[in-house]
Image (tube, rainbow, N blue to C red):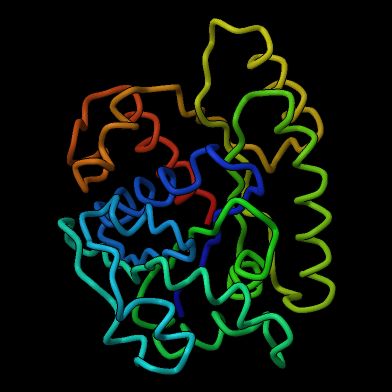
Length: 251
């Protein structure tokens, strides 16, 4: 049985999708079979690995229209696959509310293929709504990307409360795998303060690798490539490769 990670932060623009794509690619380079699950109707993860957002993706799987095995696509990287999303997934936020066991739809949808992959990485929307709750219920562990700014600290408290509620009620095995910092600018005092504060409060849950603010990381998705294929020598690629090794060493 493989391990399922969910990338969660209710704040947008913190690097969830970028992190899911690039960590997935580096896991795959380590010989792991990896499935990226795009659970955001913006479908940025889908296009970020070179797959066209269209029908026959995760929404159709949730709706029972398509078996999950038939929705999975290959990417340009060996061992790296994607369960794509499309704008149709936005309808699920309405359709799932009020359904019996609405928080378990994703968990049940991917249960037939859990044993086929070493790692599944779920990318959730920037909210704590029904899709993110489904991601938390379906996962074994939570990876939290944090931007180094003041509002990130405020949002972290609410996120941790939500994770604890899911752990208490729907997914007792859920654990926080770790927190990592993204878009770090060492020139700003605030960024350094945020890193220190979170490190003090969460200690063993914080990874030492910090992802810097890097233009090449922003460019790579527009080419449908992970950074390991787009520019493996840039600062962002080196950081994600290091973070991948750090995560693997603690699993």
